[in-house]
Amino acid sequence: MMKLKSALPLAPLLGGAALAQTATPELNTGDTAWMLVASALVLLMTPGLAFFYGGLSRTQSVLNTMMMSVVSIGLVGILWMVAGYSIAFGPGGNPIVGSLDNAGFNGLAGQLTGTIPSYVFAAFQAMFAIIALALISGAVIERMRFGAFVLFGALWSLLIYAPLAHWVWNADGWLFKLGALDFAGGTVIHIAAGVSGLVAATVLGSRIGFPRTAHVPHNVPFVLLGAGLLWFGWMGFNAGSALAANQTAALAFMTTLIAPAAAMLTWLGLESLRNGKPTAVGAATGLVVGLVAITPACGWVSPLASVLVGALGAAASFAAVQYKTRMKADDSLDVFACHGVAGIVGALLTGALAFTTGSGKPWVDQVLIQALGVLAAVVFTGLGTFILLKLVSLVMPLRVPANQEIVGIDVSAHSEQGYSDSETGLGAPVFVGGD
Image (cartoon, rainbow, N blue to C red; front, side, top):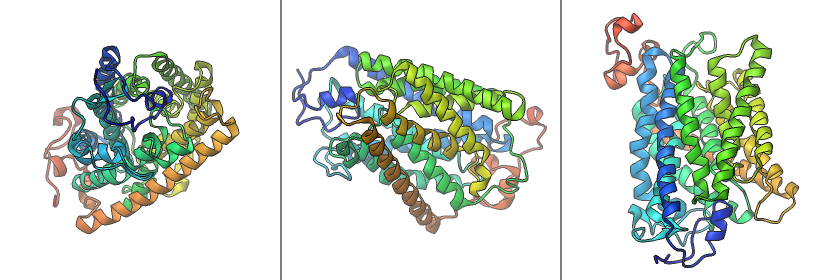
């Protein structure tokens, strides 16, 4: 039997809270097998996001758009091992950050987190940290320098994402102690990425021609493929957050099926009422919004309640997309409207609809706690993102030159283009300007 050195530092969910009180848990091979699969499913989400975002971009910037997601895998994967995991989940920390005892994954060999090897838990959480950064990229595509995004992403992952994960998911974290509920990342990932994306879009400024010039998706099949891969991987994202192959995982799996279906139908209905016809991009967007909204609640609400979560999340995000120009920020792929807004709705509905909170508080009290968690995440990620971008701008320009932006930045940033000339009708690639 393998033993923990100390009480489990993590209890992000109902099962985890019980595990945190177990001093000598035993390795469960079934739970371990499921979590290995769930981790792989979540990893697939980031390439899926690359297709989703890539299809929504212009032809001449598709590679750069997809590369921002792909590079997040390598960048955050390394940083999570070096320090990110320990900042979030290191034992013996304080209410704000964990210790650095697990830096470099030190001390995890032979240890358990609940009933699974700590290495498996660290890998599962790494996938969350990776896609959180990749989500932000959708707000700044077609104008942010690739190098600036990489530097910003490194700082954001360590200084914003990891501490926020500690607040919400570590037993030492102040929001965890307050009783805030976030089953699989509505606050830690989606609100954080949505708000950070909005701030980044504001700091960078609008794309040339926005909003007068239409920036239409260049490859709708890519969008549908990406959405499908996201939904597939999201089953591991949400159900895997039970950290075991149990009834809680089964409930999360079911609500992750129902809520996006309800959200997709809601979005298509609203789109038909507003524009006369439902669209494929609308279907893909609606299901992703439903996935976002159910994420914080998936293990705590009934399948019937998940219909309401998906529908309300879609309605709120749809309204936010319609009024995005009034915010004076060119959030290119509606990261805030789809992830920030739906994440906020989902977090609040978690308090209102959860039939098990583990807190014993009346639902009104739980909603107030959820609202405080949302406010803390918005302020911390918004202000932190602004400061980090200003720091990066002291090292290098955040934005590509105007001529590169107009012709697309695939060739100038990567010396490649997404399609051959015969497929697009484009002329031979020409390197424009500096790096």
